[in-house]
Amino acid sequence: MFRGVAKFNLDAKGRMAIPAKFRKLLDVCCDGRLVVTIDHAEHCLQMYPLAEWEMVEQKLVSLPSLDPKVRQLKRMLLGNATECEMDSHGRILLPPKLREFADLEKESVMSGQGNKFEIWNEGAWNSLMDESVELGFDGDLPTALESLSI
Image (cartoon, rainbow, N blue to C red; front, side, top):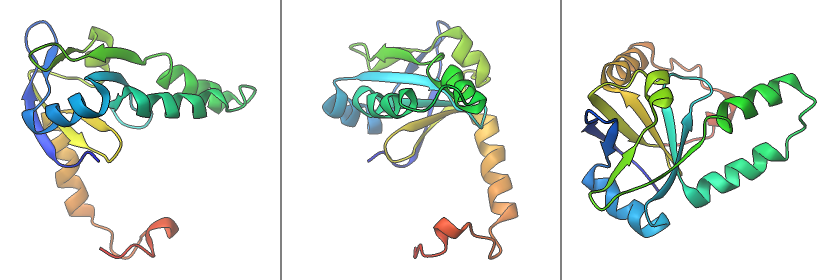
């Protein structure tokens, strides 16, 4: 399980150094083999260990392609999926089109989301967190969350 947030810096070549707190875990669970794609709803990236991505990919491939929304989702997620492998320094190269989509600059954030990570521009992440705190939930929980006790 991936949890927590860590800051990192992109270098001039667009490489991200996986934060140390996540690096060992990724090395153990997937030998540093990852897939990065765009998020379908936010301007961030999603990074999966290869085996996790393959499960997501199979679900996407099995969806009916006659539905225009399904085709759109497949184009976005599958069409932008890029395999990355950590180098000996724990870095991966993020392709320019993915960095541009997420507006990634030098200062960025990696957030654990259970089976994957989100990669955000640090300013966008901070704004999202501030907005989330301000909005709160005020009893407007989706049905799926009503039974959650935390």
